[in-house]
Length: 354
Image (cartoon, rainbow, N blue to C red):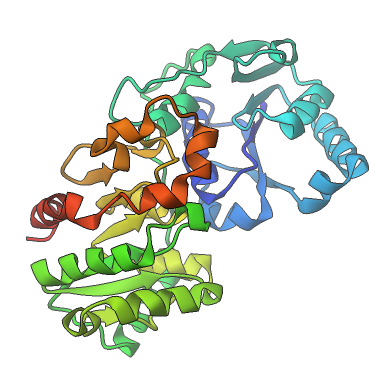
């Protein structure tokens, strides 16, 4: 049996959708399971033996109709028995149409049901604490009626070498071993997903005031100035606990560093999803335009907790579409004061550090 799973989106999406591959491997141990993703996301799939081949969706496939057609024909040559399209947008519709696969599963959306043999309802509300991001992916397995116990938890695989390199970095920067270590998801993938820097500095002050911990910042070199702004806005007593220059050289080394941390706090995004896959407790600060019900995965109020402006000012969201909220995100962020959830951060720290 040959299976292709499609998910050409960002790191968090690719990692979460890998649960489809993981469960398919349990159900069909001898199948060939391939995964089509962006080249920039493959680091989160390293070491995952549930995936046989990674097929890259590259920028040329997006820019050129000819290249997209060639990719579709390449997929057709593979003669897949089953395709699960977790992306379900124009690019994947074309690939699915060209694939000639025997069975094709995706979400039920207007105008495209003819492309698939199985169209799964795109549920609007979560039924469990798994969150819609997980529940929707798992729903794509339902038409197969798998006779297995479904595992909903995404997994990251860290090698012994990567763990040793992370430990060596901790030692190089003289990270105190007698304290717990917190990773701060400092900046989102874009400004509209980034908690205001002066507010984030207050959050980090709350953490440092409440607990004697080591604090690491997650940021890319191109985000250095924003990271410095947060650091310089923090109190001197907080700055003493921050290991500002302790960074991984690439995504795999960052994963190794997170594996040595005890928990993560900060902006929603890939870093949070990677930390969860490493079984680290998480506290998420959501952007006003992002739907909490989708990405508040495994929320239990203890090990995984999140906050959203809507929790405190529901009136600001009445009658507004996602498009409108995205347009107003920066002004809405200014209404999302860190003191609103100071007690929740302290409770989270109490339950996961003390």
